[in-house]
Every structure is written in structure tokens, then in C-alpha cells.
Length: 446
Image 1: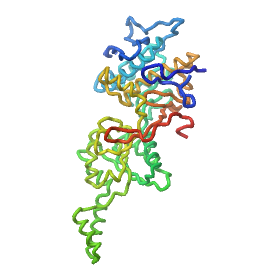
Image 2 (image 1 turned 180 degrees about the horizontal axis):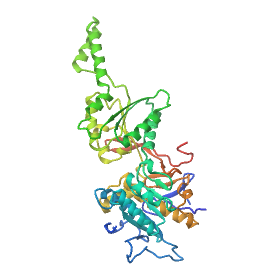
Image 3 (image 1 turned 90 degrees about the horizontal axis):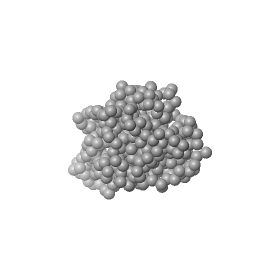
Image 4 (image 1 turned 30 degrees about the vertical axis):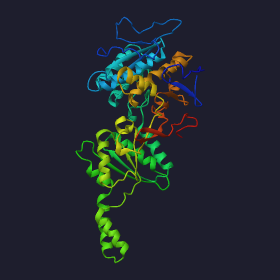
């Protein structure tokens, strides 16, 4: 039986077990960073490699128990090192916050490659780790899982590629399928029925497309329209033209003008003059537009959509989790747009500390480092049987957990189910217009 774990005993929201909606009971790796000023003095340890004086941190004792060795596989060198370093910072924050002397965090460099990830996984098992966190990228996860599967050591990875999940591998990441389902369902609940989507021709775009079709299928009166663009294209004119059915609308306009030219009615003649003066093509045939994009593509689409007749006053823009970014939220052309995200207030303290102490902006991906270590700490603190603390049963507790990324639960198939809020982009920033559910009871997914 688990003892209750208070959520409020640390300066950042702890990750705790949810019971009926309530908290219960490399060699090139960077040197450890000092904890944030507001954090308690660390009692956990950062492993410094074989032969280091600190060994595995605090030795076993009747007071502390056997050390819990946590491998953290990340790209700490190479072109992908920036993402890995930021996740490591967040993970260290969790280690400091929980201040459990049994916890030993072992950062291992994957170098952002398959071979590097496999090597790091073998090193982790050689060092007798109890659980593996990471890697970050899909190809890294697949390679590392090939080493860890069969070892009895679970892996909680950060990739969003569902193909690498299962059989001892859990993905703590955000699922585009859940994001699309959340935002489309919310739009339907607000009365929208005519949907369109503009998606990149990529693996991510294919997943969003399938989720978009599933989310709109079977809903009475709902229609959808889906257009792809190539991310490496120099211009997005062609897909936007296709999306807005520009040629057909232009032909319809020409037909209207020809008809009105033959009419002697004064009202028709006034309408004819307006059409000729404004070159109006009429409204597009959708009332929402899902744009699964970010960065430069997203910024280019705003004015381009306007040019081809998409009026943001009449068409509601919808996004995925890619929109959960300050640059996107500040994009004027997306004002009024909706996107799914974690409840923003949940991780605000951690975001403030990361920015103030390390000048690192907390992102949904970066925050996974904190929640992964916090999950391990929570399970270790609440387990009466150390041999079962990271069992599949413990990891997939149906009540779920609460972390800085909101509430979530690991599913038996290896994916994570999350409670997401719906945000609206407004001049002052993104605002919650539909809060994330506070509990998985009753279930969010049936």
C-alpha cells in the first residue's frame, strides 16, 4: 500500500500519484550545475562516471536504503546537444527538489545517434541501473531499447514516435493524436462543423492527418478537407491555392459576373459593380483550419492565407502542440487561434527558475526531464517493495500522476495519456479557454 505524498512540500509542483483526482499516497558531460537558490540542498547525487570518488553517491545504509541508479540517456554532445543539455538541467532540478539521498542520476551521452544511444544503454546496464530515462529521438530510442529490452529495466523515453513504444518502453512525450483529438473535439463542442487541415508532408504530418480524419469521422454533419505542403518548398502558394479552391472560386465569380451582366435589375447591377471593384471570390468552404506547423512556415502562412481569401475573422485557426511557443503565440496573424497545451500554471514555478538561474526557456520537451526524474522519485518513495517500485503495474497506475506538464498516466502499450487545456492566442498572450481535466476518473479515454 502506498503512503500519501504531499504535493506542496517542494518549491515546484511535485509529481505525485493521483487517487480519485487527489494527490496520494560522458566523459564530455557538463559539470553539475548549482541548484536554484529556492531549491533545498541536494541529497541525491550526480554520477561522475566509473572510478569517480563519489561512486554511486550516498552508500546504502539502514537510514537511506540501497541507492536507486537512474540512467539519463541524452545527446550531450554533437549537433543535438542543446536539447539534451536543457533536459538535463530540468532533470537536475528534480533531483535537487526531491532531495532523496537514495537517488543517483547518471547522465550518459548518446551523441544524438543510434550507435551512441546503444553504447550509452550498454554502459547503463553495466553500471547496474534500476531504470532508464531517455533517449530523446526516435532512432536513439529504438537502438537503446534493443539493448535494454529483456534486461528487466524499464525505459521512459522522450520521443513522440509511437512505433518505438511498448515491451518495456514508455514514451513520456506529448502525442499529436491526443492533441488533435482534443482541439477538434473542442471545436465541435463550440458548433464548428466544416474543418480543413494544412499539414506538412512528413511523418509528423501523416500522424496528424490520420488523427484529424479519426477526430472528424462519425460526427454528425462534420466535413473535412486536407491539403499537404512540402516543408522544403520555397513557397507555399500552391498548397494554399489548393486549400482555398482558388481556381473553382474564380470560375464561380466569372459565372456570377456573366449572369449579372445579363440582368436588367438595378440590385444585380449594383452587385456586379461591387464584384468588379473588389474582385471578390466569395468565402472559403471551411470554418476552421488546422495548421500543424511552427516557425517560419507558420509565420509565412498568415498573410498568404489572407491573400487567398481566408478571413481569420470568419475562419478559426487551430493548432497542435507545436504552437506552444512564445514566437507562435506572439504571431499577430494567429490571434484568436486555438491550440492544446498543458495547463500553463502548473509548471510556472519551474519555468521561472530555469529562466532566472540558467537562462533556459522551459518548453514541453524540456519539462519532460523534470517529470521523468520526479516520477522515479515518487515511485521510489511510495513503494513498500523495492523490487516492484518500477514494475509495469506501478508505472501504469490507472489513477495517473501529476507533474509540471500536468496530469498524465502511462498506458500498458507504452504511450502516455495526458490531460490538455485549450488555449486561445490573444494580444496579451495565450489564455486558457477550456481547462485541462483535473482527474482521469472518470477516464478521459474510453
